[in-house]
Image (tube, rainbow, N blue to C red):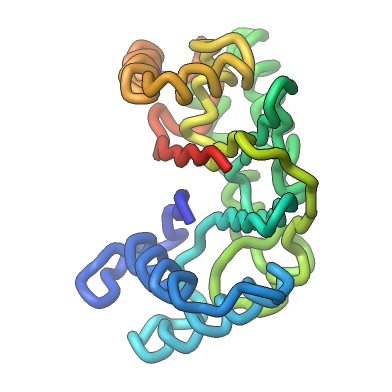
Length: 247
């Protein structure tokens, strides 16, 4: 769980932590001890949601102000990789000698880009960036209000039905396969900033332990475009987190 969502209302600390930090800690502690072997990842996710829901009620969190986040679960068993994605954090998988493959939760594929296409069109016709983004944020805000309802998309929170909407898949993998789980903010190094040419070059930088330098370049690129007019995106800066594993 590497990308928490900004609350729609006022942020209230939970057990002395921000909502995203609280949800991450509770989920992490549960997943560290839960029995995984022989259980479908969707079942693990279903139990996880039930756990954070009960812990949230214990902590006094209201149902209409529960924190939300993305979740990427990966499990290796023998020569098989099980993957479960809920939210807009992409995962890259590169088998030895092959090109990387990107996996995203289909609920979120292309949704933000469609909103940004409207912003790009308005910027191209000469509208002020602040005005274009104000209009887009109204739509984005509405989309977020519909999350975890039949009208919207589903993320990790306290709604059990979200588990049924997660993307789940199984792949054969060879020893040495690389996996990168990242927030969409880290993925900005590829799109829109083009600091690396493609996902393969992104993986090469990470595998060579140059991710810190890449993050510094990403932050510099964000600061150089404070109005988000050269490189349209929601928010001048975004959480940028990455985890790399060699299976």
